[in-house]
Amino acid sequence: MRGRLLLVALVLASARLVRATAPVPLGPCGPIPRRFDPIELEIGRLRRLGGTPIAHLGVIAFRGGRPAPIPFQVDEREGRKLVLPDGPEANADKRPGVLDADDVLVFLACDAGEHAGADAVAAALADAGTVHGWRELSIADPLRERTGFVYVVSADRPPATARRYVAYDPAVDLVSAARFRIGMVDALPSYLALAFAGPFGPNLLDGARLRAEATLKANLAHWTLDESQGRNKLIAWKAGAVRVVRRSRHEVSIGLGIHLTAGIAHTYFYGEHVLCPGSMRLPIAPAIFFRAIRAFGGADGRNLIGWRYHADGVPPAGFLVDGTMDDAERAFDGRGDWFALAHEHEALLFVTRMSEELARAVDIHLVYRDDASNARPPEKVPGQVPLVGYEGRHVEDLPTGRYRFQLSIFGLSGYRRGDERPILENVDHPLTADVTAEFPPPPASAARPAS
Image (tube, rainbow, N blue to C red; front, top):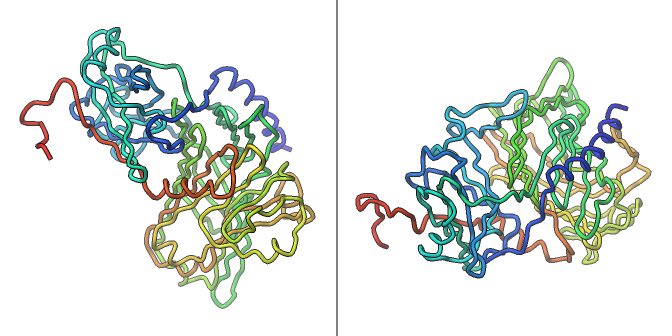
């Protein structure tokens, strides 16, 4: 009952939130045609801007010779730890509101523009009051050999825009963008609505599914775990113009007084995609105690009849979501690092990346179940229509060490089979950004030698 009431609150709050803050969709990309790539640049690389009030910062891009401010944010850090200023376990910066070398400037590569000369930048800042300096950032796309530019400005009245790509309502843990809304219950996703070619549709998510089976050596005990046995809590957040960042704590009880702490997770919500990086440290090898461990992570869908599932090893037309498993679906034993759910103008592309050590030790399989008659509680809507995700087998074979993994979820418009390829290539070939010009010019002793 509590979950249903919270879901109703999410739906009501989503309309209120969008009216209040009106996140805008991304516009056409400039020279860098990557809609999902943020640029994160440490302030120390901007050279001699440390100590600048964040309120004096602006970022502009030139399109067709005309300058315009673009959305950006500064995420402050203490050392390597991100400062999330809101929430029951918020952390603070020692010098809040002031640029430090370890802080990070964040904007979207899609918003980058063309190169502009110093005179054009000066003219764009004619109404900015006292200009303390600017830096030209060049963003390079190694796949397409393209370069885009933005100009980071320090001035009394820097160019600014009210445009934002995301908004957040912490009262109901709801993130909204122009094309999606995602709501969490007990820090796990429970609500997802899309709007790529019209108004927002129904909730497509019955809930996240986190399942595991573990057997002790000599078959002394066997556990079957699900997400209801976890204790998940939202502990801190930050809502900026480019991304919303949530920090959550996760723990699971497996009985006999044993608690497994999965640790702290950070989730990054952008205007058209979600990034979920993670790491896992094993101080001892599971094989010392366990004979077998199998784990599953994914999502149980709802209101997805008529959608299609795509992945490597699936027929070109994809599997039709209809609530029943046909022979091809039952025989599917998928391998790979991506899958997609698509319908007309809307699609969700899921992409995973794992550290080499993790990928070598754990056997990863794609999971697809489309069976309306197969209830596997806890669930709000009985059946799996469909259940999608990844299953890791032989987890017990992991040696001690730290392992890293990442899940990215991309919202796509008008998906056709093969559209995932350039996105997968982009994930594996990150953009680079560097300072290529600055005002005032650096002292001769600080100037870089010509290459």
